[in-house]
Length: 261
Length: 243
Image (cartoon, rainbow over all chains, first blue to last red):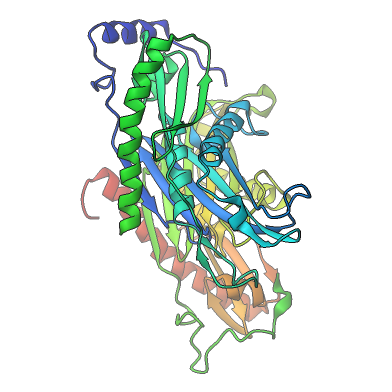
């Protein structure tokens, strides 16, 4: 469904930006409340539910035994996919995966993969014969803006709580999946001419381009993505990069807090 | 599905079931209305280890135009199991099973929603199964009914999804996973709790007439119980207090 972008909304967002205000009264770098729940899906080997404002996302981790790629006989594999099914909002329609959902899954996948938090060698059972395939499926149930951050957080939180179901596959004892690090995504959207953190659905509807930054534990960049029409300057990037550093530390602490329980 | 009968013991020596339930006892059910802010109406139903979420959008313009009905709304149901909802991962996308369940669920809901109030329009009902442990189509129907009510869509009655079946030649209410896999029959129905009518009916396995009648008796008993929980969930949201 093509969404109409009301010019009145764009005008209002521009006016608010001039006053350094947002449509829901937040400051430019203020995020909405985030809630994280882990181990919440009975049949998944790792799971998480993330709620950011009115956005609701679940992630579940499943394992399968597979034969390794011939050129990487001692490495398992990781796959992360996102589904934007019609449940997520009025604008979503049934059909094959949309370019938007493919982008979403791939951006989350890159952040986790490139951070190196999963050692592919640790997923090897018998070199050349048997390795684990780890699959993270993300399910967006309600889109009220910034599904990228919600999906990124749900994926890593689910992965960090995952238990390898070795007994069910008859290849040893169940054990926690080894995850070395907590890559976290922070997303920014240009609204009323300037970037803001954690845009809501109205800001996304009346906004322009978005930038997704995934940072590892040391604050290093692991994945970047610019989406939608628009251009930005290096100075603008420097500004949001600073904000992303703080945001990622906060969300990483939230993940650690859940694991501590 | 019913092929494994005899291989697995499903009743204890004292006649109770493996999870300790009595033959006419259902799994615990809890319901929350209005869980998805993006939807016009929504509900989450936890039934035993099953978790189903339903979202309702509309009434909205029905398109493409050929699906429009001049005298009523069409109800567009999608029942979908999340990839992580089962023991073995499910590849995303529709399959024959989910298409059939979507079709008969839509027809059941069309039987209770006052569709003639909204000519030429469409009501979308999205059922997502997040965790599956036998009986998901029934849990999906219950979730859909609460979501429709939450969306303010007028209905003749609620509809409650319940199932009974047969294990070790004994009729039991609300089969769990093992009972479904190794039992002899499964009878899922959608019951209108106030009128006592039936809007959804499927069955597979082997049941005598007497067994069928007992299974139906159990189903009606469970429907009444679940209906109370559905009403409580809606009252909690709209009355802002205890039901």
